[in-house]
Image (cartoon, rainbow, N blue to C red):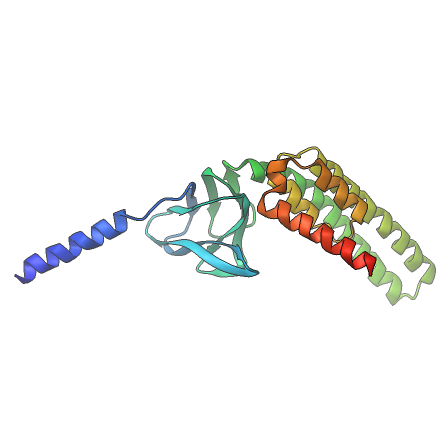
Amino acid sequence: MKKIIAILALSILVVACNSKKEGNMIVQGTIKGLKKGTLYLQKMQDSALVSIDSVAILGSEKFKLTDNVDSPVLYFLTFDGNTTDKRILFFGEKGIITINDNIDQFGFNPEISGSKNQEIFDKYTNIDKKFQNLRLDFIKKDFDARKENNQELIKQLAIDFQKLERRRVLFATNYAMTNPESEASAYIALTLNTASLKMLDTINSSLSEKVKNSVYGKELQKYISEIKESEKK
């Protein structure tokens, strides 16, 4: 009798494991060197990072996670729930997305394929990194100038930094406008904290209706509307 109960319990467990529903997005791949741990698929919901799916790794470097995607948004692939040091940021969308990485440099330079928005976003970030490096150079030069109390250099650096920031915003604006069918363009616009209302309006006007009705498209419209309302006061 005990044996029959054990077999039934095992059968129920197997059915439960196999009955896990797959969403319209599958995230799969290999994390080299990962022998034991848990991978989490996470995304932002109501300003909080929530776990959508998870998989325990026991001896295998391969993984598979899933979610239902209504509108392409950014996801996080995290190791053991660590959302600061070890995470991979990627654009999730319908279809199969493959992510390959290694545990030693998890999140540093992952290989991601299968997401069109990710391709658009990667091309943007590769250029934006150059602007970020230039900004770091300016910060160092400004620090040294202030240490030496070189007022003339401090003023010139401030002028040059503003020019650099205008170039960065102009690049981002042009890039978003050349990719009006990508939800990544709406997200890029949302990251432009120093962009003028005119620049944001220009990007928003260029986006397709599909993108305007996406999660980030709606957030961009809301952000622009809030700026316009604040300027009326």
